[in-house]
Image (cartoon, rainbow, N blue to C red; front, top):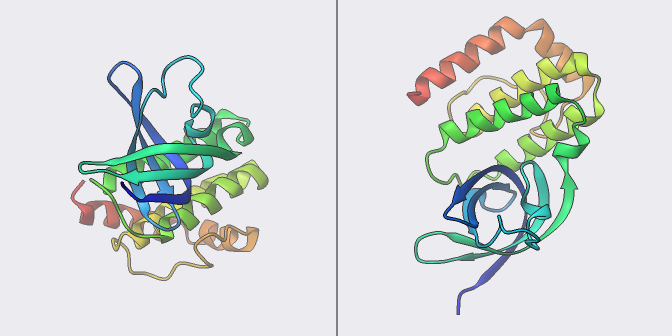
Length: 189
């Protein structure tokens, strides 16, 4: 019998697999970036469907098989997609998650990624829209730093996106953009 792991996770991507299954990519606080298969997820009335939508944060039950993780249970906690009521914040969230997925080929066991993404999603839902550009820059830079692709100073804690920190990002925007571009180049993308 395989051991069941319980963790919280944010869905950053869903990929169809076969007729009714899907591969889900999560960011978790304990395992980092995890890709898992969810069976029957795309069937009408699937019980896990609400908990495994893109940008949903859920309590998960995972089993590690021979080849991949499987989702055996999920209870929705927060639907960040619905909280980001406009398309602009959703696009920003997609860009940062897309960058993360491009930089990590398989799985990343860096637990800092969960704090960065959850803090960024929270910032997109509570801060004024004129601060979202700075929040996106800061999130991208923190993702690069967590993956070892940037070694410079970054203001604040991983999940902190306060107006004061974002004002610093606005003042130093050209330098941060340069660091992000250097990190992407260093990754080989």
